Image (cartoon, rainbow, N blue to C red):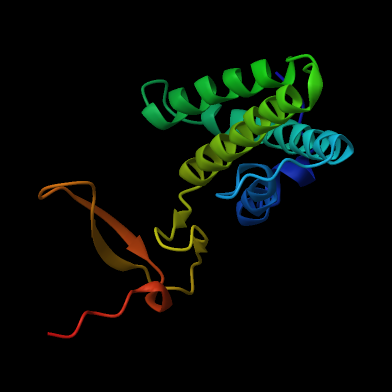
Length: 164
């Protein structure tokens, strides 16, 4: 188990910033960056993973052994460690794919951190709903048919109702 400095473990992690950092390589419009930029992003994501692993690990070990959140977090930590051990890929396209896997590991660890610290995320803007913000119930349709997904959003993120 990796040691965590006490001040780092007690400080909250701003997962919104870490999530935003991954948008460059995982964004909806894939742009093939220069090799040097891919290397910088991989270095950044590795640092984020190395920051998150011990904190998420400590949070998950503090739970009951049957708590599914802790068990999922430990599985996510194992996957993130495997991503850290991947060797540099050959060529730009291969290195982009490896860096994207690192970015996805960052996102997964952020999800586990938010789950373990009971942070509620807005389903519309993917930002945390703070203690001063009141979450508003939100129901969205998923796929075809009558499938609905229930979640919460910021009051400001509630979409306007269609006029009849």
